[in-house]
Each structure stands twice: as C-alpha cells, then as structure tokens.
Image 1 (cartoon, rainbow, N blue to C red):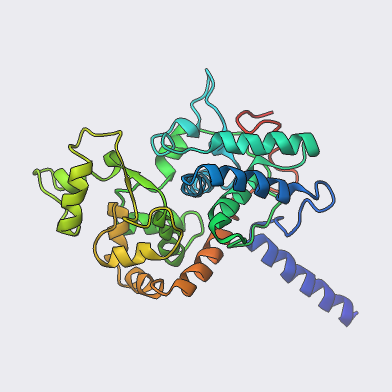
Image 2: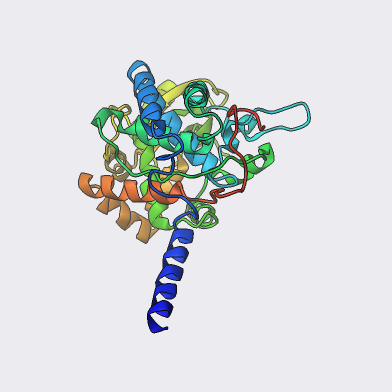
Length: 323
C-alpha cells in the first residue's frame, strides 16, 4: 500500500510539473505520427534563411506576438474575413513577415502527414531553426504538441502585445500577465539584437518626446543624431533602421552592450535600465555564454504560454484559415 501511495504521489508531482511547463507539450511529440516533421521544418527554414537573412528576426517577432495573444496557438497567422478583423491586421502585426514561409512548411507537412502537425508547432520550430541557422545547431529545445486556436481578434493584439513605447512598470505587468518574469523580459528583449525598427515606433524619442519638440534625454545624443539622419520627421512611417547598429544580422549579446551605452532604439529598451533589478540582469547578460543559456530557457518558457493541447483547438489544414 505504501509503495502504491508513493508511486501515486510521484506521478501527481510529475503531472503538475508537466502542467507548469505548458501542459501536454513534450519531446518528439510527432515521433510516431510524423517522424520526419522536425527535419522537414528545419530543411525548409534553413533553405529560406540562406536566401533571406531577415527571416530570423521576423520569426522571433511572429512567435512572440503570437504567444502574447491567446497563447502560442498560431492565431497570428489567421487572415481577416468580412465578418472578423484578425490579429494579423493589428498595428503591431502590420510589420510582421514570414507568413509565406510558414505556409510553405505547412504545405509540405500536409503532403507527408495530413492533419497531424499544428501551425502553432511550426511557428515555434521555425523560430528556433531560423535563429539557429548561423550556428548550424539548435540554440534551444522546442517541446511540441501545441494545437491551433480558432479565434483571432485585432482588438486583442492591439491591447495585449507590449508596445515599444512602454515604460518599465507596463512591461513588467504585460509579461507577468503571461506568467513571465522580469528576468524573461530582459532576456527576451535581447531578441532586438537582430532585425530592424520602423521609424514611427521610435521617432517621438527624436523629435517630440514630451510634446515640446524635444528629444529623449536618456538616448545617447550621437546615436539620436544618427537616427535623425534616417528618420527625417515624425511623419516617416516607412523607413527602417537596424536595431543593433553594425551587428543587426548577427544573433549575439551585443544588444546589452549598446543598451549600456544608452543606444537602445525603443523606449521599452531604455526602460530596462530604469529598474535596479532589470539593470543588474542587463549586466549579467554582457557575458555571451550567460546570454545564450538564459535566452534558451526564456524561449522555452515563452513557447509554453497558454498552449492548447490534447483535444483543445484544432490542427489547421491551412495556417491562415480555421478549418
């Protein structure tokens, strides 16, 4: 009897730990049903990244924006219809790209294993594989078993995705609402080491920070002058600028070095230095080995936010429409 009770308690603890890590996600979820799934994703993603070096930043953003609205359920991929405006058409998602590559992966997987691999898992795997391309090895583990959501609302994306204008308290609150810590906030902000920023998301810091035609005093003046040569006015909503000057294509920890020089592009970047705890984490991540270890762990936690598993949701046949 005592042995049975011990086994029951151990099983219960394992079950609860599994729930904390994102419910029914696990390693090699498709081992029996679609054994080639992860190889197919990696092959197509690496082929595309070799041709388009902007994709890793786009997928990081897509995955992040997806997980912050209804969890990591691929709701960001759904197209708007005559009766519904979807997340894809929200202000923060109008500059997200890479949807065509996700559909290419989905099409191939549907040929091999119809109705088996979710779009949500494809996004999670594509993000990891795209960022890992330059290293020729996976940078973090992706547990699989997500299912796809059926609801996608523009209003939820506009209200739930953290904005580049957020101060520290709003960032902290936003991450906490998804079960993520200040540590995750600082670590995941390191994704800004690759990719570009659009002028309209930060030009107020250059031209009209407090509404009096002034610049943000927390922004390095030389860097601000450089940004003004790119973003000519507050009205510029088309120009893009490298977020990590001189290192915008390399996934590394250079973001934290420029942050310490007050050269973070967005107000949300600079905000990380306004809190002592967050600022200390920035200093820790100046160590490259520490950054890669911590980024992997935070990406795994992000990928488990609000996931649908088991019989929840569906497996979409096409990623841009519900079945």
